[in-house]
Image 1 (tube, rainbow, N blue to C red):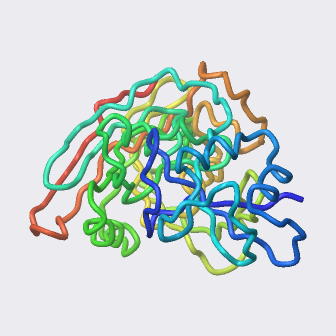
Image 2: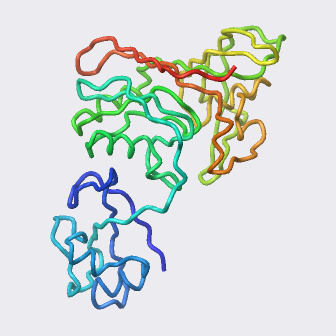
Image 3: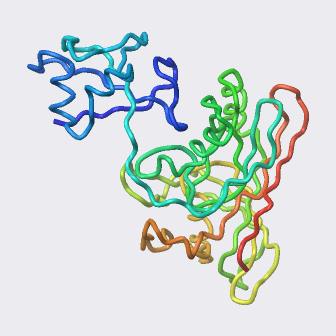
Length: 303
């Protein structure tokens, strides 16, 4: 039997370790285990639970220690650490553009996930930044796809999370992207692309369908580069893979895109052909000071 667990950040019965929150497990009803140790050793035999308990690293929601004599209690919570699976290191640095006033702005490289999830846990911008700053409360105010590089904003404190995250959810941030993609002389720019984008859970690619539009992108031509071109993109909405889908729908897919127009996939250790998409800048009125802020990436795309 396998049970799912999740990172827990509202309460802190255990401190973060190596940039990662403790994990949480709710004990299921109907199990015949006598002690918690019996249950954990049966379900997860690869872990050294007795050692972790002796070290005080298995606790309940109030931080009280579970030990090897603790009786199994259905419905109770168990908080603990677990080492993530080994990951292929992303061989690019996470550069800090700004660190003051409770926010940290980074220049994320291609191939680095924003948050720890699925196959990308330690190799995420969030975990890297928590370790670098030794600050467990560092949290992203928004997200970038793993394949997309550029400006990404984090908050340093729990109190600042909501006001900065709401900036993005309320679409109060001007987001400017840059892309290198195909060139079609028959297209006249600027172009505003509208479409209905849907994505099913567990499916790698999103899709466009007939119906009411739920996405919008303004596309401007910066310069032609032979058979390709450099574009400036202004998404008004933030659907999954929106920029990649919209350029592909125009017949000018972004260079290095293994998803659109045809999904091909990329091995986890292949960093040779990054998606030529960059979150160039963000601009907004600061929710705390009211000051106009603009942050720009220092990265460049291949022509």
